[in-house]
Length: 308
Image (cartoon, rainbow, N blue to C red; front, side, top):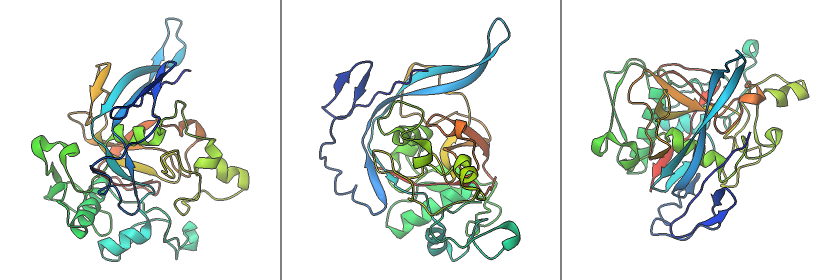
């Protein structure tokens, strides 16, 4: 399988073979805003994403088809270098810790781990955390949440009505903290690489093979222990899967698209990456799946973005 990725930067691109590679990041007026602790600036640019689809040949052989689409992200953005941790959740959300792996329960092999990613939070609760972080830093909240059941503090928020606080409900126009879009997540995870992973998988990701090889029980690990990608992002393909903004659905049919926001309808939301108990063959930059917005799982967490 040949993977191609296209990266561009303002005023600078170098054509190399079948793809354009990023050579340097120039300073910009947003440079000061990009100096936010725990975040890294991701440059605006273009990449080619692949959409794996199951198919059957005329002979009845099951195969996997790869549909390619050129995606342009027109605005730079900040992305957290690490997944949101249990300590960060507790400090911002009133002391509660919804995580399965939070200590005090030998029966379920839980362990105390402030620096492990927070998990067992619904998609709605991740939005509430983003709003709380925006309020803390004096930024506009990206989301309006109304009619909710459950509690944001313990990660159980569900059945909310959700609006984006931006023109035409466009998440890219929000200036506070938010979940990354699916396109932003994949673009950042690839960091200019062309293959399914941005490095040797066991060196960059906590996934099931690592624990099997060590004879260890699969579980979350402190964030940032494995090698980062070329843009300084850790655990993009392992530790916990990560909520993103988009509804789960087919990619747009166009071969070229800009600032995609996901399917227009649907009840499930996408998560990306893989987790401590994911089989290695799914730990790729393009693997995608989804679940209910109210779903809470010990292998799903999140990290936040912010448009520049």
